[in-house]
Image 1 (cartoon, helix red, strand yellow):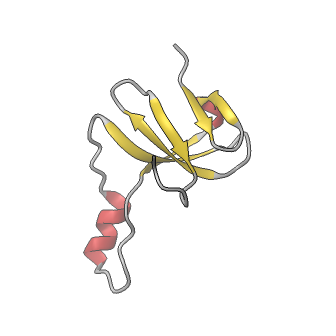
Image 2 (spheres, rainbow, N blue to C red; image 1 turned 30 degrees about the vertical axis):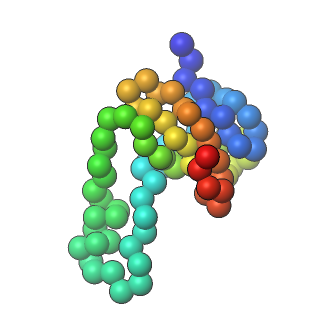
Length: 87
């Protein structure tokens, strides 16, 4: 079975068209400590199951978007621009 991702701009493509950008995490706010920034940059939950992730369409529109993917099956449930709320 092919691992396909739907770019919100270009449509469904092979995963090889994209670059994985990691889990979607909330950035520390103004005045955050060095420890909070370390956690943001270097520590991930890496939990099995459904998670929100950053993906970059490197061989297409060259835009970043968010995908909701099940890490057990690699099934991508939905994709959307970062400004859009998840449905």
